[in-house]
Length: 434
Ligand code: SF4
Ligand code: SF4
Image (cartoon, rainbow, N blue to C red; front, side):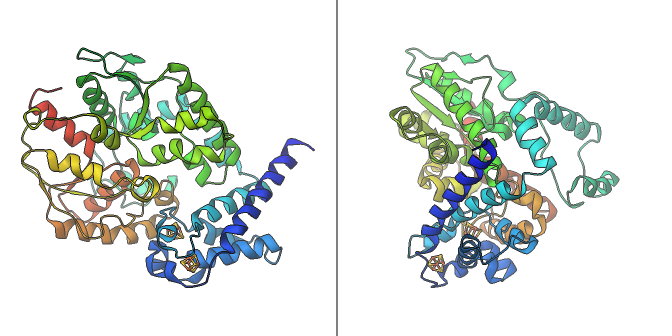
């Protein structure tokens, strides 16, 4: 059997496994009351129950893969709200991911996706260079304000004219440091690997700086492997199982070479990929258990391992709320740790917003491909942030930061979105602790 046929057969096997999942569906309709996409679009084929039905018909051969079917399957944020609320224990987002993979094996990946996932992301340097060029252009245009005529060019690249983009970094986060960053305090506690993620590396280098400053400042040696690549989540979400597998295997083999005590991530999707999704791609083994057992979200790691004293924190007189990224809250069960860190900071008036754990609509590439729906979903988040009356919204996921900030700017709302770890680093710097 040639490789292509093997891949097709594998996809069919996975789809049949998913079929066992959706057969558990009791048709109760609970998912209709929680799915953010269904709430906006109100069509049964967009909700978990409808997607289960589609999958069932595709598996039985009663349904052809038409454009409408593909559209329905692509209308999912992978927010896991349905699985968290399903009384039958169905995980519809797993069904959706397998359907996307199955369709890719039937129809191919397409030129642009193949170029992006198999070439640009895999080689890494083209996206690093592209980010720098965009960063220079953004600065040359002095920030793209709401009336800047450059906005008329956005649709040429598939973006809405209204959209506000973050400014790309001129120097990537990874290039700010040597591969091994020594601890700033003796005795050296542990050797920590840092998976920066593409967004941390190319868009939010201040997050990389915050993570490195906190860890080295509290006596950890930090290793940032230069050859790390994308974790594979966006590739998997677009149905490219083979591309995602190659990336997951690469990072798995790379990080294991450094004799690390732990691996931290400051991006919720990267964390979920390295802790959980990797198990879809790499055979069960003690090496895999050892690897996944070492992965920690940065908020989880700090809260568990670093005893930050009150006198080590400087005063930050802000009102702050917290938005739960889906892949941190439902994906990894991490809800309290980021809140605990924020509440520790003197001067911070923490205000819980309504529906803090409801998806903001970003969902990685969903807010590029389905922008109008993503903004409709996000409008509820913006309203809840405004009602909370805060200066900052803290979170722990780059696409949540991007999407919420974009919509706040569109509403001419003054709140700023930041990572928890950036706010914590500011407080520690204000007290000269790091
Ligand atoms: S909540 Fe679960 S069991 Fe109920 S309809 Fe949705 S997927 Fe089926
Ligand atoms: S994962 Fe989220 S968007 Fe997708 S079907 Fe479930 S609730 Fe809806």
